[in-house]
Amino acid sequence: MKRHTKALALISMMVLVLFSALQCSRTLILVKPETPRKNKKAILMLPGLRNSAKGHRESKKWYREQGYDAFIPDYVSDEGFEGSIANLETFIEEHRLEEYEEVYGFVYLMGGWTLNKYLETHDFPNLKKIVYDRSPLQEQASRIVLEVIPGIIHMMFGVAVDQFRDTPYRPLPRGDRQIGIIVECRATRFVRRYRDRLEPIPDEAWMPEAFNQEHDDIMYVFLHHDEMYYRYDKTGEDLLSFFNTGRFTEGAKRERIQRDPFQ
Image (cartoon, rainbow, N blue to C red; front, side, top):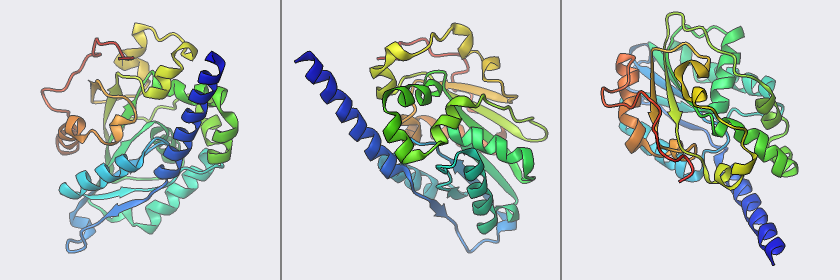
């Protein structure tokens, strides 16, 4: 009975992963055409692989309420980073992001890896501010999911997850950009289920320097990775503050939140 229950739980998790993956592949473009692009600012959001239908809906609602044009491309390629960078290049050119006065980036895990690789070989001079979503917990999820259900992951995403697992974060020189980091302090349901597969995370892994990225400001939120796609009630004010000023709000938590990440 115990073996049957475990198998049933695994099948359910596989179905959940499949459903989530099928829902996340969406492109969102919100542009107000009455104002010339040279007089406007835009947000480029690069999601990873966990943006559910709920996340898509809440992003659409939240970005529509802000004063920016918003672009959320479906850029991840089953060919890995090379294909994803090519998709991002095409998207930026087709939607003429270089014509905006300024562009601000909000990039989730795979989005951050992809953007940094893109900027190694492409100019994007009006990309003036970037907020990275980082997580010592979720950054292990690619390894764990490939250990647990490699066949399904390869069917859905090709080599994209393998390359993300195997590629260390390559920092972006700050230069004249302003850079912020939001750190997730809670584990997703998937990571909680496979907690025994996590490599130990020392206290040092939560320190600002551990993220290997020059930055102007950093904040910590007690949210897990899935929540980061729709809990704008917790992150929206700080995102807008950073896009406007290059700093998160005064009330942002700038030290690790000392709560059980598995609760």
